[in-house]
Length: 303
Image 1 (cartoon, rainbow, N blue to C red):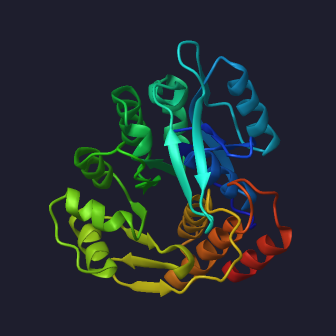
Image 2 (tube, rainbow, N blue to C red; image 1 turned 135 degrees about the vertical axis):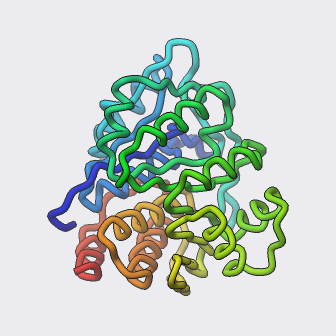
Image 3 (cartoon, one colour; image 1 turned 90 degrees about the horizontal axis):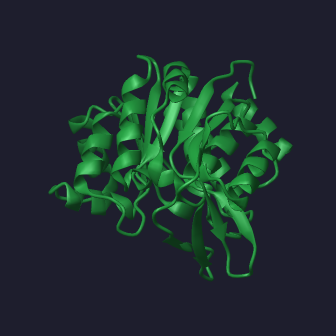
């Protein structure tokens, strides 16, 4: 889509989603996010860490088959590749059991990653990948090393007990764009000791207090809210027969970043991001085969 191409980094966890039927899907928000960014025509990079084990080798092969740059995928000889046990309810909503002490908990700050940070046009990170001190320090070093025009995107991504007020505050302070869902927003407000009346007032308060340029609240099938310094826009979402919602939020984020880098209006950002999120929700897993018809439609919307 489009002639302009940016380097987009998904920074943090990489893992295998293990489903009850015995199948597995390579996932983690950085992978899902980077994959959708690549479908949109960006140079998408997964900056993460796998074990020196069979699942790690399979992850590398899978990323390459998806067309993603694996030059910045680290290998860990002491910790296994990450896995998550996924249970999906009758409405397609996933529940996760995220295994601890895995390779992506030990992201290493390296000269290669410093170079990547300097040339990135956008980098997306989350709370989850900061659950261990080593990776938290590396992520913060990466964000500090980005250039003045890099868009730093915080996908709050609250999972199990792997977050804290400190991680959320520090992440908000260094973010240009923030995305969370309507269930996470009141939890964040409570953690920060702030009242929550409704999505818009809370989003506006956090955007203002932390000087965020664009704040996004996703609402599942009911669309999303975007808040900037001078504008606000709500989208009602799309009806879709949900297979599972794994990766749908990451697809939304990829669409949002793609449009934001091209200075699109809030209505266009919301339309494209919601279309991508709905499309992934209608597929199994977070990295479905490309739908060229959909991509052409989105290109026309941005033209």
